[in-house]
Length: 257
Length: 252
Image 1 (cartoon, helix red, strand yellow):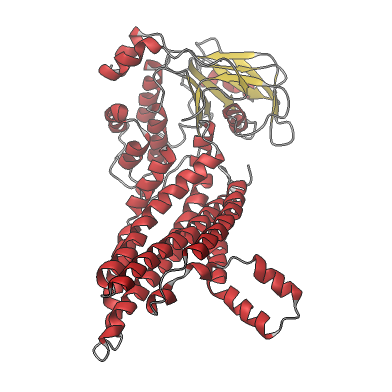
Image 2: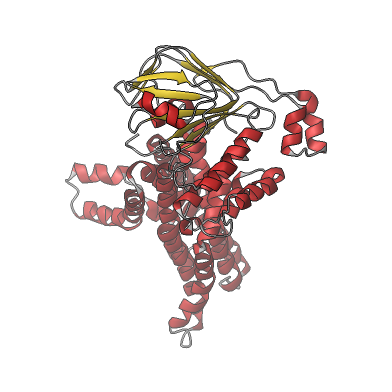
C-alpha cells in the first residue's frame, strides 16, 4: 500500500496526468470539427467516438506504458524496491502496487472516452442507443484488458533491463497486435503454404480484437455476448501469460546485484 | 506490511495487546512513551562462520556477534563488505556460508535511496509516514534544514540523504522490535545535520537496533559499539569510549 501511495504521489507530482485528461476531453470535441461536418452533419457523432477512442489508445500507449517503464526502472535503480523488500514486501506486492497506481490514472481517461461517446455521440434511436452503450462498455473492458497486462509487462521488463526496453517491447507488442497481426493474416490468406507464418499468427496477441472503433463508426452494434465471453477468455489468457512473465522478470534491485 | 523477522526466524515479538486501546485513544509524544513502556527488543545474531559476498566469500564472522537495541557502527575500508553485510542482514542477498538471525521489522536504507525528481519531500512524507507521526517528521526535517517543499531533484546530495533518513526514522513501529540498517547515511551530511541525527538516535536508542555503515571521515565521532570488517573477518570492537580514529589503525 505504501508503494501504491508513493507511486500515486509521484504521478500527481509529474503533472502529466493533467495533459492526458485535458487531451481526452478536448480531442473528441475539437478534432471532429475538421471533418466536412457542415456538408454532412451525420459525420460529427461517429467522428467524436473515433476521436475519443483513438485518443485513449494514444494515451494508453504513449503515457501509460511509458510511466510503467519509468516506474519499473526507478523502483529497482533508486533503492526504493530494496527498501520495501527488506520490509518483507515481495516482488509480487511491489509490482502490483506500482501497476495499480498507474492503472488508477488510466481509468479516468477511459471513463472520459465512454462518457464522451454517451453524451456527445449517442444515437437518437433508443434501440441503437442501448447497443451504443454496450459497445462502449465492451470497448472499455477490452481496452483495459489490452493495456493493463502490457503495463504490467512494462514494469517487469524495465525493472530488469531498464526503461527503454521496458517501454519499447510492450509498445511494439501492442502495435503488432493492433496492426501487424492483421497484415500477417492477409499474407496467410494470399499464400497459405507457410506453416511457420501460420504458427506465428496463431500465437500472436490479437489486440485488434479489442479495437471496436469500426463498430462504433459504422454502428455495427455490440459484440454478441457469447462471442464477447470468448474474447474475454482470450484476453484473460494473454493477461495470465504477460502477468506471469512480468512478475518473473520483476526485480527490486538492479541486475548487477 | 513488512516482515518482523528475516532469515532464521525467531518467535514473533510480544504484541502488547493491553496497550492497543491506549494507543488509539491517546497519542503519546515519542520520548514520553519510550520512557514509560519498555520497547520490544530487536536483535541480530551473526553466527560464527557466517560468510558474506556475491558468489565468492568476501568476509566471514569469526565469533558469534549478538546485537540488541541501540546504535552499532559498521566500520571498514572501501570494498571490504559493509554494504554486502547490511544487504545480507536485510535479506536482500544470500549468505555464502553459515547463518544469522534477526528479530524486528527491518528497514534497509541504501546509500542511493532516492525518490522521483519531481516529488517533494513533503509528498514523500505524506505517502510513507503515518499521519500521527508526520508532524514530528516535519520537525526533524526542519531541524536538519531540509526544505520539504523543494522538488527532490533540486535538493543537494546531502539533503536527498536526509529525506531517506527522516522517512526511515518515522516509519519505526511503535509496538514491534525495529531494525534499521543504514548504508553510509552520513555521506554528504554536514556536521550539524550529523549531530542532529545522532541526537535523534540517542533519544530513541531503546526503540530500534540500528546498524550504520560509516566511512573514515569523522575522526572525533564516538563509537559506542562497532562492528569491524578487516582482512576478510567480521568482528565486534569497541568498549563504548572509542572514536573512529581509534579504530583506524585496526582497519589499516
